[in-house]
Length: 102
Length: 520
Image 1 (cartoon, rainbow over the protein chains, first blue to last red):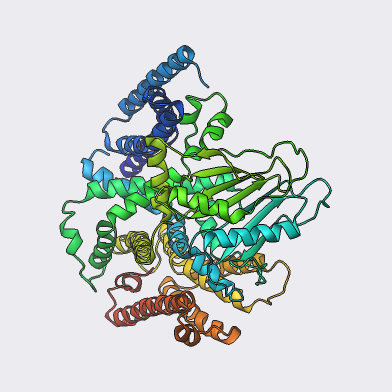
Image 2 (cartoon, chains in turn yellow, orange):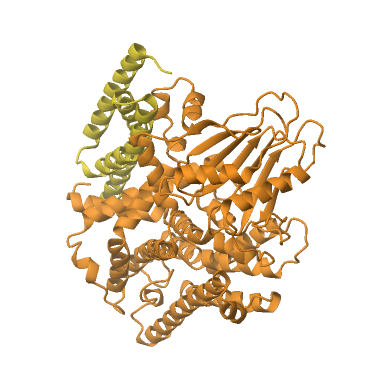
């Protein structure tokens, strides 16, 4: 009985740790790539697009952090976030390589 | 997270709220006090009596002072915090002939006389603490504060989705019912003030946004300096070409104020006394909702307008207004008081949330006489934060009056007194039984706040009676606020004591359930 509880506890802690890692460091990386993408595609001057994207980034971060603790599957959470991050990162790289920076 | 969405969010709300709750409480309390930063500074420098003078006159007076005291400087700048500030802050950059230890700053009163007051950081210390902390590097401090603010945002959003009946919580406050009352107090303070609390958290993050998320700028600028130059122009003094008298500053300030229709807040003079002189006049920090200031640049000899900076663009306006909403510098007395009360509600929300964590778990403890380590830790940290920080602030004000006036390094010792007092409450709560420590710490805090007007009356000639009689609203307001806060803490201590002794005989209930509604 107590052994079962311990095993369950261990699993629970691993689950929480995996979600927390997704919700903070991975989230920061993904939010950063999305923020760069928004700063590249917002209309208007480079300065306005940069500021606008920066204003939005905290909504994205908070949303992803909550999602990390709301979804059922931790593995799908990680796969999903990494996919979004890599896709946005690739798009960032292409847009900067193509359009250049000031 | 196998259970439903609402349970997951309730769990997230509990733990994000708890982990950084103590720091958030400190940020909220010191931030709330900062709505009266200028008034706190005025109270902490009782020697200064000057009343604010109109813009052009005081800038002219400050310039005359600089001509006399810092004639060889390559640039002068004069800052006024706005209509509420009695004095002006002056900075200058000494020329090559000046000795290395020559002064580079001074405070003047509205009439342009050097402020002869006790050395103190006043309200500015509390303001800076709320995002730069103290004793640690500001760069990391801002990251820590940002992490706390983001936890707060997640705690608020997950708290909202946890609610079943958010409208009903507006009107629900059942007192004297233990856990239920704590929950009601937590809900009432957070739901009723939700627009403010959401606004203040998000705009707080926005205030330091580029510190946390520099990648939005990096996306478009290979060189960050180019962004800074476009956004916050800060010209350096040009090469000197030869002496020429500086034009009178007052008419230029007047002209700038007429152009904008709002008051000027700073004057920066490059190369004073040279043909290459330039005078840059900027709008006051309290002149509008956006903190992004406009400026006009004049030739320092002829007085011709040679440049203008008008921050424009939707994103800049949004950003500037968000930061402006956070700081509330534009607000008048009534709005400022509402800001302060909303800030207090935020403090109550954090404090009741922290206490609720222990109240909920106390009922489920295996052995209530010997709670596990985690529970005891939270309980002690709650006392140290919720009673300890206000106590430290009262001690900071008392130290301002009691430390010798002429002493060197005085402002540092006021701050040391603040942290020693705060630390002492943590130590006290660690060595005393929690139920007693709550009562004692709350009573001590009440006593310390009550002592502030008393000590003020004994050490200065600006007692509450005098200030009420002479219509000195800054001093009267400060002393009255101290008495009101003392009453609040006294009531909390009395309630904690009554519940503690009342339930002692009955056995079942435990004391800290006690403090019925708000503590902060």
